[in-house]
Image (cartoon, rainbow, N blue to C red; front, side, top):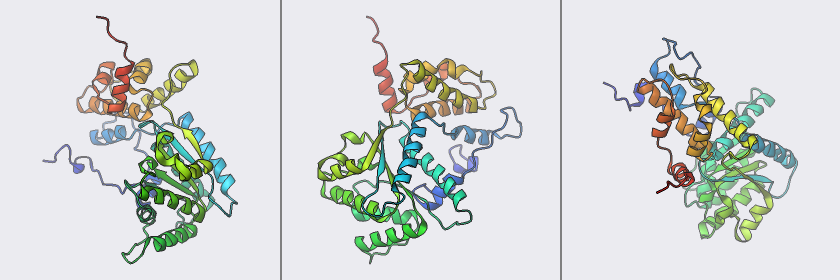
Amino acid sequence: MVSPLSNDAVGFAPLAPPTVWQGWDAFVHRAPAPVRDADDPAWPQAEREDYHSELAVMRTPAMDSVFTAVRRLLLVNRRQQAGARRGLIISGPATTGKTTTMMALGRSFQLADACQYPGQDNRRPVLFISMPPAATPKMLVSEFARFVDMPITDRLNQTQITGAVCDLLCELGTQLVLIDDVHLLDTQRRAGAETSDQFKYLGERIPATFVYSAIDVETSSLLSGVRGAQIAGRFKIFRHRPLAYATEQDRAVWDDLVRAMEDLLRLRAHRPGTLVKHAAYLHARTAGRIGSLSHLIREAALVAITEGTERITKQLLSEVELDAAAETQARSARPARRK
């Protein structure tokens, strides 16, 4: 008997991470799960579970703003020959969709590049990595090399690896470099300070636009001191905040997001409009964090399928425990009970 937790139970094939080209390219070209009618008898439950596990990412005003900002930076940087190019830092609290926005940006750019350069399969227009913890300059550039599958031997020192990586990315036509979790870089320590210098050097050697994401970069060490001043002088900061629910326009944006996610549900007994009806509750539960909202709806849908109820109710939503940040925010927002 196959365990329900086994990958074999749902025909799941492990995917390479998006921080290597094989995984990134698979993410860019991965077809969405097929949409069928919930009552289609030919749609196995395991595939329906997969479908709800990966509900499509919704475009938000924040995504549109980031896309516009990066398009403009690409134009600004296109003919710059000397010095570090201009970049963007996507900053905000956890689970507000920073990484999702960054990956959607890279995917959109790569698909557009493929249309511009048809048949050139050797191009690597986008590079996506995650900042290694306690990174050194050699660790950072090694992540670049790993993404493009460039072999590294023990005989190569940091300078040699850096030079080889820069030359290769120039040959591959890399134009957009995405680095996630740069708040992990502690420039108060020597290794972090040297890695910050490596960032600047890579930005000068690689003719690409760099985009970072970070949790509350304004409070990190990344922008402090002389090195921080250099970064602040070259990078715009886009603040990726949780979605608000204060004004009529705020509520319209949130309600549209909830409605779009609800329209994707394929539950046999779900009453359309239920989630939109509880949009205010969903905002209070998630504190406007898109990642928390996606988790809440996807887990509720999967519970509804596996337990056979086939519908999402407010009671079911209340039983799904979210990430600690969302739960803490929700508790602090509840009015105190009268004694």
